[in-house]
Image (cartoon, each protein chain N blue to C red):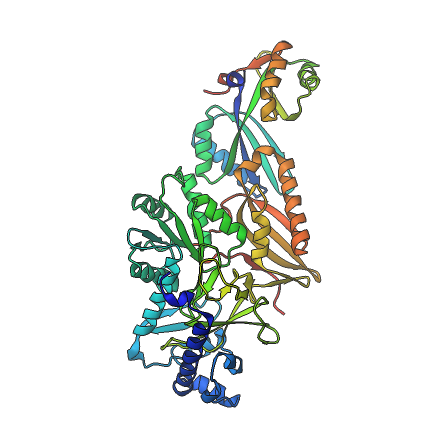
Length: 431
Length: 147
């Protein structure tokens, strides 16, 4: 464990949260006009917030608020205090911009060190960091964290798959950091290139995040490389990676002395008790440049307060089931891509690569799932392939209550993403 | 007997897309591969092309390099007289020994002879070859196909 706070008694954690929350509320009220106006319109004074139980009096912040204040209007520090700026790609609108002071960087490095310590990484480890460097927070977040714990970092970033494999082998990387889809792509290419994944490489663990991954996909990656799979969770609006990380028991611990989590009902906005599924909301309580009050992540998950065998007392979150804005409603049934993925990874004969295509046929939605077949299955002939199709269709009907048509496609035809995998093609006209 | 008579067959998975078969034949031509026998099985959305070629290793490399999904199986071949009842005789031998035929294809060779290719379950290959040989069916060695 990197920091004793991770296993501190609950009362101690709550006391720290309360103290930091009060300070943060004072700061945003006096330094950020957006929050001052919002608080005033709701009749909230900073003094009304006395401890964490008062959190639900505060207003929510959304991605749209960040876009509306592009680029720096939500910053609570002058620009001469800002030492780092990151930004989203802005593919779905104006980009969102986040800034860090020197102390914000220290916090980020601290939570990343905690993340890497989940796999007991330290001097002697070689961390192969295949997260994208640049404006995306993944690459630099892991980079600084790995240096902090004393490991050697190979800043390979995305792309150049074959070259990455060569470096991983020659530099004897012990830790792989990548998006799940890229980790799987690396394994596929390694097999094609004739590498023996378990003997040519020295990998023992990996940190995977930035996109939802089903249980099946996690297992496929862990088995292909023969490594311990650690999930990493984060988002740039809160700090980047480092918001939560999975311990060896697979539970995702939230660094709640810096980021207070809540679960809300995305429709009613009501706060739900631990154990309930809903939208994850975060309040940053230590950040200086861009403090955020009750940020709606759109990620659907569940929080748990039960103690963990690893000894950490920090609250845990379940793997994100999907995003409230990624959720497909197909003929009235809620479908998350990760649920489809879970069904696919349970069945032999296909690769875990898929695309979901939704179209409107008359008044009904038509769902097609394109999946890549595996080389082994074609020796069985047409009958075996038709059986596989039927089996997949039945499983999706039984488990997800959706009538999907399965289309088998040639392996490697579906796009491999270097960043986040594009799993949905929604061709329905917008209403 | 399997070691002596097994013929390497390559299966290629093909989506029903315009020009996809052309890409296969082009890849083989470019690699200077001669196709000795072929069969195509298809459904509405995809097909499987089975090939026996003169150089299976080279063909596999050429097709993989072009991004095709391929797999290799052992099949066996027999030579019969090109006359009524020959195919029946072979099928009967296999049926009598309770060997299920997954699929078969054939071509007419030189001098009034025909060559039949059979695919049976892997674990039945040895048994099938024994049965055919005991019943006087002429088994074809792989060298006949390979260059």
